[in-house]
Length: 286
Length: 229
Image 1: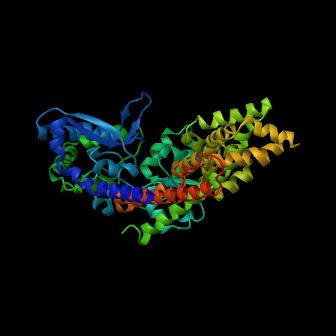
Image 2: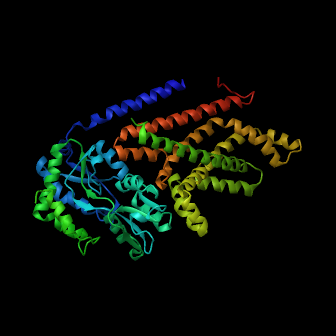
Image 3: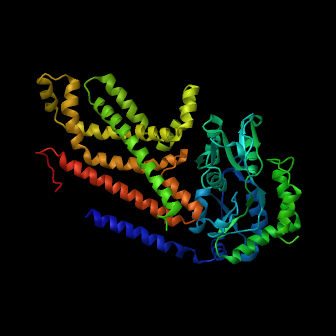
């Protein structure tokens, strides 16, 4: 009896696995036209890209890009006003959320990588950064060459964790599901450093109780171009999303939003270098 | 595909970590469970109160909170050298193990208490009449009988413990669920990785259930309403 039961369960699970890809037949634009809602997967604690601010509003640079650049394009494409709905999506959950149709667009802090391109499509790059370390001021860790034997926190499922595991196996890697848990571990000394994309570390430092106590160190040991992820093979939707970003770059609206969040008076001052600007504009052939 | 190479290696590692944290957590849970379960029935009020406080406090707070408590809350209370030593020797594993053990110990003690309370009072009185002290009566008569009575619910509780060990991934323990997510981020094959993880949990749990069923038959008390084949 027990054996039959086990077999039935295994078969049921197998069937579910086979049935899964059949869900994503309908195009994203058709879905939005029907429901009037564009659902984005974003973050709650990744300032300044997407986070919940002091007055309890869910805001950020990535969210602004969607609401001010992409939403108008989508509205044009479906021919009616739409609403943007936000859902929390962490690195381990975002691809499943996307492929199960729970969200239509990942607009957070997702790095565009060749491996990920095998399962999702990416928009134009909307931000460019690289991995560094956040440490207590005066820490002996000054960069990636100092991490052998040290306890290093990272985010589960991030590109940085992958690089550390593959290229610097001497480090003791500890992976946490989200940024607050990893930072808590750093504050308490469970780990010696927290590695993430440089801009995120600056964001975290700005939000810390005592920012002067922390510093971001090291050269970029990885390249992290951020893109918005979509279900693979939906060319029509990708065209609309890219058109929104392209329009932003061309009209200068993108740079206004950049200045709002990363300018001298922004949430996290992070002036755009000429190289990064050239990189972004090169995508639209300028 | 998933059983070979890097992914297979990760699944195996995750399974071993899950088994290790669950086995150690189970030993702790069983010890605490028997102790607290027995204390809740002894004829001395302060001990009963102590055991009741333990059970109600630990089983009525979510396991996730206990994970954070043992990992983030407890280390700052330890002296510096002990803390550094712990941090260098997988603090997250031990915190997860203690969280599982203490939480499930509280739940296990209720199972054991119900076993003890199913034993007629006369059994205890007879033991005392034969000259045993209360402690001896518990150790030699009451607890051994209770443990045989509670095998079925204790099995459920043990299976729960094994599955709940997945919560330890929130404090960076690289157990089975953690590894399935890892595979997912490397290969983006979410459904396959989840299916593999599910099958492993299922096989582990079914094996435990089979062993416990054997134990149940082996140690059944003659004369009770036992119909298990």
